[in-house]
Length: 591
Image (cartoon, rainbow, N blue to C red; front, side, top):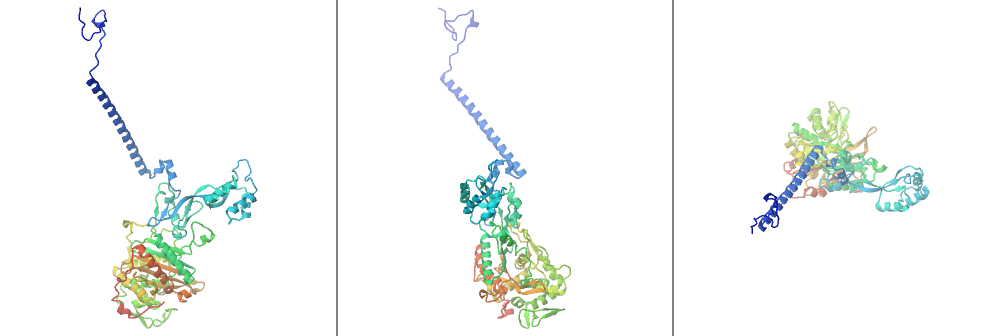
């Protein structure tokens, strides 16, 4: 029997070997496992490569997106739905992040006479609908409301209503009464800092204050998601407004104003003008209170100019000895004018005494020796010849005499008459006088340390040091004694000026001011308070000058705001007055 070669099929025959069908035996088990592992490994590598490619693609898209945002400045340009997450108008916050103005959705009452297409505007009579609406809104005039409904004109019947009021309107069952949800501006602190913030009009535009200044940033899709940060400290602002309001009540003044200013940066930490208004509810009465007494109204600020005059004379070298005296026993006559003091202050006074007693006669002589050119140049360096530096739109232009000043102008300006400036002008000038001599523009923007302006030098450092001593003396021993607050080392100067009127000055109408700084051994803040036409009342011992109202207000304000600003009372510290005491003896000033 013939043998069958390996690899051939038994029982199959053909013409020859070429037609034989070969049949291979299955590989052994280890070989099969090796093939499976190779296939699995190849599949895994493919999957890893695909995942890596997907990650690389996603990363490339993200980098490209970031680059496009960097170029075009707004992510919302590429994400149409992104704007829905942003407020319609950005938020304004104080320096500590407390919201002062923000957006929220509120309901309005809209009359849509075309709500029922082809049908009548209302399903009931205008009078009946008006009656039902007045049940919800009792302050609305029923007859006027019925007239508006009968007009057939689409209009707002009420700009802001509460959610529960909107539900009651729905229950009336009139399709034409629609309470749409609309963006609304809300001021959570009511009238706090109203003259700083301003308000938003019905057209969505900012008005009056920083709402107007920030209008572009607050409405632009690329920036409205970021908060606009003010230099204002809401806590300090509240204390300032509260004490000014109290002072108005005590003295029955028609108005008041105040400012707290950082002496080293120019940041406005608080700014108030009273009476105020509520930006949440703008009405005719509120519109009348929008005038800003601190930045827009100019006044002759009286004796608060006297320390500036003395500082200019010390700086120029016309005063080299503070113990030198000037005659003050009789009126100073210049041409047809007579410069007088409010009462007899004695035959002569030295420099500290002139400031402590607030002598017009003594200050006028100091200014006369200084000369018109140098006096005017100092006032210009303090910015008194131009609008105050502040971002607010309302900035008053000073009453300023151009050209060469006559001798009498120089003398009257020395004690705060003849030119008129805003309280903000005065605050910036006092900051320069006590901070080492550098004038800086004021600002409502919170500044980073590297954003503080360099400023310009107005007074020498030595002059500033001397003025700090004399301002402190005015509070410890002079006309500013009611501003004394134990441990806070306040220094300042009173000023009481008659208001100008038809035919001259009105003796019965005063503007009283106290310009101050604290603590005088290391000044941090200037505080200026002003009252418009205060009266002599029992609460002010029937006196109406600055010593009894404006200075007293500062004496209440500083202990409240000092700890908020990191200045704590310390009765073991004070500015060194040892070289001043011999010049004044037991003297005391009165205004």
